[in-house]
Amino acid sequence: MRILVVGSGGREHAICLAFSKSPRVTKLFCANGNAGIAGLAECVQIKPDDIRALAEFAVKNAIDLTFVGGETPLALGIVDEFECRSLKIIGASQAAARLESSKAFSKDFMSRHGVPTAMFRNANSADEAIAILNEGVFGDESSPVVVKADGLAAGKGVVVAASRKEAVDAIKELATIAGEAAASKIVLEECLFGREVSLIMFVDGEDFALMPPTRDHKRIGEGDTGPNTGGMGTITDVSLMSEEQTRQVVEEIIKPTLRGCVEEGFRFRGILFLGLMMTAEGPKLLEYNVRFGDPETQSILVRLETDLVDICEAMLAGKLGEAEIRWVPGSSATVVLAAEGYPYSPRKGDVLSGLDYAEDVTIFHAGTAKNDAGEFVTAGGRVLGVTATGNDLASTLEKCYLAIEKISWAGMQYRRDIGK
Ligand code: AMP
Ligand code: GLY
Image (cartoon, rainbow, N blue to C red; front, side):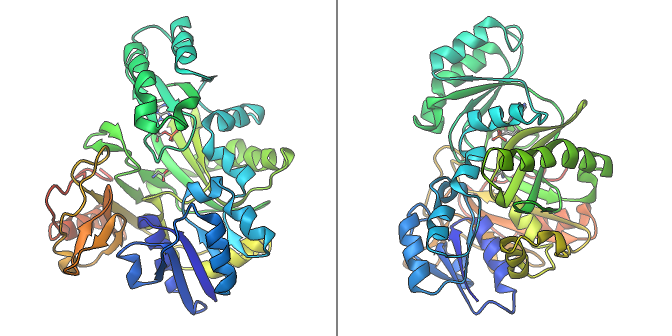
């Protein structure tokens, strides 16, 4: 089979690695890939948001299956574009992608289908959002409140404000941080407390198959301090969700969601990601994503034993319920190494060293490129992910951090407390 993966980050590197292990794959392309992916796949210089050019490429190159990594092409309708041309593709349709591409839509959807989530109000402007805050809907001036840009903002559209004043400041700055378009509508939410879990699943429209639950570490700083990022590290471990919590999430969140999609006229086929908060009142849904997480995927797919091509075919045939999906038991972890200046203005062009000396781990490239001398250099915010597996979390993390000691570049930053 000839496979095309769409995207250019660490997540897509992990997806390419999973496909490259399949004996059924004869040729792997990635659009547009990165310097690390180039070691596994032929990188095609078409940007993930150029969905028409991608469909034309797939036709011309007799691609048997396309797998979409990120949300932007899904929100632009890449799946609809491919399906019109009878091309096989894994991902959510444009209608289903609204669950992620509009937070106001997704919160209203949760309300319509009784999915437990934080109390919220949608606002059509910054002034309206400030007026809602001043009504006291989210408590008094010292109450925390969460301010979210409605649209896609690459993980940078959410501010957890400690007080009303901070929330007002965040509302005023949101267009600058998240972009004007994303911040044209604003969602305000009650602040929930608890531990977060990312629960990702394969969905074929009717049936779903859960992947191992993951914990992301969203803040830039150790001890969960500083601004939110796309994610600084992830773990998978049996301790993340109890059987009872899993049962609750399936009954109260997943089943109503999939039923809701059908009732609203869009079946969900693709990868569904639940951002969950395990609160004292039970699991609540923070958000939907309609794709794999980054860096969740790196920690998940290193544990996948089943051929990813077989899973994709079962999804396309609506036979996920019959598929047996096996995972390597134990734990996994990914620690993200970021460039100086991330998340606001990452510096490009710093030369990476020591990659060949890192042992017992898988290194996933995200923002890397090669310079004229053929060296890897920083080319984005999150530069590398260092991923390990093991029987337990402690030994797995030790492998990651030992390998990281060998790797360096000017201004490299990472969290030393992933999984701790
Ligand atoms: P989201 O993109 O909606 O998942 O938000 C990004 C991050 O902001 C989440 O992973 C949480 O850490 C935090 N967050 C979002 N919504 C809330 C909330 N209602 N209460 C507390 N933290 C939140
Ligand atoms: N790591 C969080 C995300 O991919 O949305």
